[in-house]
Length: 237
Image 1 (cartoon, helix red, strand yellow):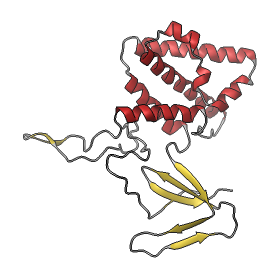
Image 2 (tube, one colour):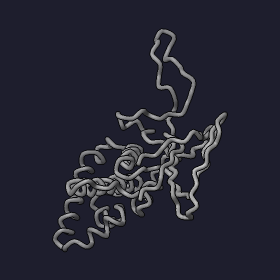
Image 3 (tube, one colour):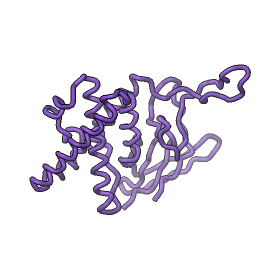
Image 4 (cartoon, helix red, strand yellow):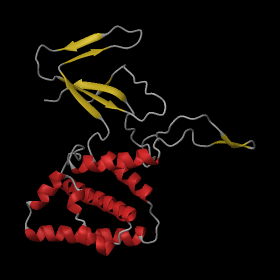
């Protein structure tokens, strides 16, 4: 069952980051980009074309915080990966998780100015993948674990040689790529979901209506997102 949008709306204070807005980075061409509002300004008096209608949603400090939080959410499974539809997608999700480890380790290496040979001795990819996937890999046979480890090292070396060594990728680029991938790799990333046994829904100039159940068990789910506000649905059985 899909979530139903509530007539309630948030009124966040200006310059106060409260909710996660997907596609704030503009990397997803299938969704509108999200910007902070700012007055429209033309480039010059002779050009009618307008520049981007807004300013970046996240400043450097906010991006650093969200990036650290995203890593923690992925590794500790607070942001669980999406459910695979078939065996092929299981492997795709595993590869995406390993790719996220490459991004996180590469970012760490740049910030700490650590070269790849030294990095491979001290850092394991297992610290940067979801705990559930880590547990699954540990249950596989020894040869399979060795193969995964070697594939990851080759992937990290290739990424390092093509991007890090020639400084074509910055720490900012890595953070943006990591967070944009989180939006498709995980389920409802950045959303807050609450369970409740009753709902009281109302909006300005409209009568309120109450959805409640005498049962004490949660019957409804309320989801809050930056892009879509408040939505609710009956809790799936």
